[in-house]
Image (cartoon, rainbow, N blue to C red; front, side, top):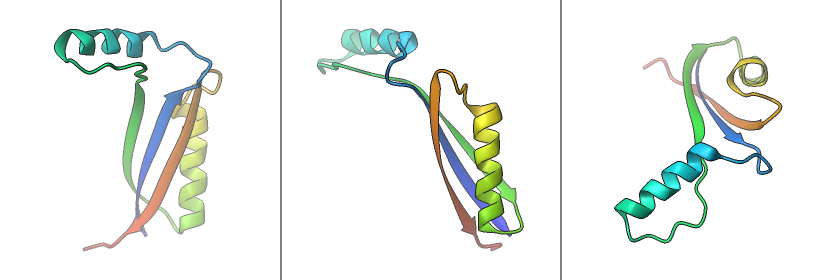
Length: 86
């Protein structure tokens, strides 16, 4: 079966986002928006084959925990869905 997944990785709320703060300051120089907070994250998109939905989610969770996110400072969430072969 064919699947797609999106994994969202974000810094935990208690962790300072230095890169996000730098981008927020740059936005202030380029725009009139009053941006109070801006945090950056990662989006990982995956196309893959798996035997069923449960196994697909298990493996995406395993990859997210062990590879995509730093468990000390980042949280992650993901969505996995089956796609047709067409």
